[in-house]
Image (cartoon, rainbow, N blue to C red; front, side):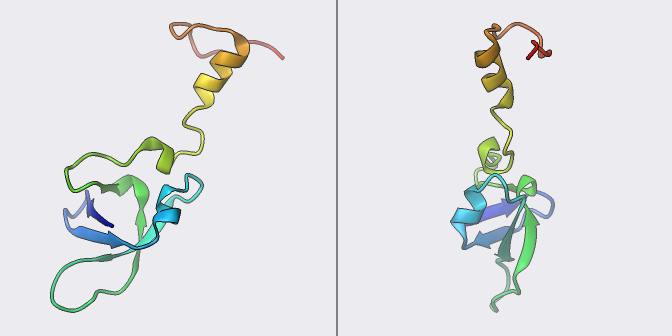
Length: 89
């Protein structure tokens, strides 16, 4: 699958989609696509990759705690406009 490195604006080919979608893995192995020869594999930070359209990767692909605030709100019975504070045990 092709992505864009937001730092260098070069294309990056990522072969392991399972690691890419795993929120507990913060990096992924890929290869830059330039020149006629296949480039050596490199480790890329998922937060520095984006889709070819420029859209960032989904938060659930690199942040394992992306729903903690919503889960805490539902368990404690708070509303969305309430502040994010401790509700007690």
